[in-house]
Amino acid sequence: MVASIGHIALIVRDPARTAELFASVLGAQVILDRPDGEGHPQSFAKLGGVWFLLRQGDGPSGRNGDRIALEVSHDDLRACADKLATFDVEHFMARQDSALYFMDYDNHVFELDASGSIDQTLSA
Image (tube, rainbow, N blue to C red):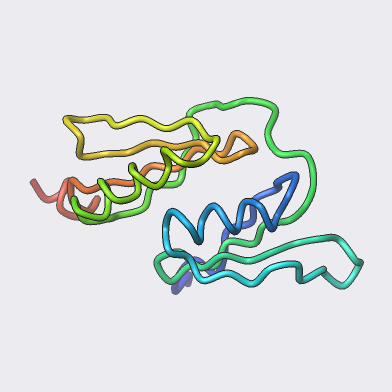
């Protein structure tokens, strides 16, 4: 059966710009401007051992509650909040400052969670 997530693909207007956001705020490893076999612009960002394929196109027209949650430490949560303040993206703290939500340039929602893993939550 499934061993792990291979990658997550997101459609974004400017793949390099989104990859740079992930690198600057989240410390992602990035590979910029690597077109696919058909010449479509795309970049890659590796977060927490998972590659995000950022392919050029029209992203979601709005937000629907879907989000990608990433586990971080409390110190990293605060550092990311400080870094996000220098970017033109919406962001806010939640759950007594144990979570940070931000939206990329294309309506994708990310949650940085310092409250523990889902495994810890479910076993409580």
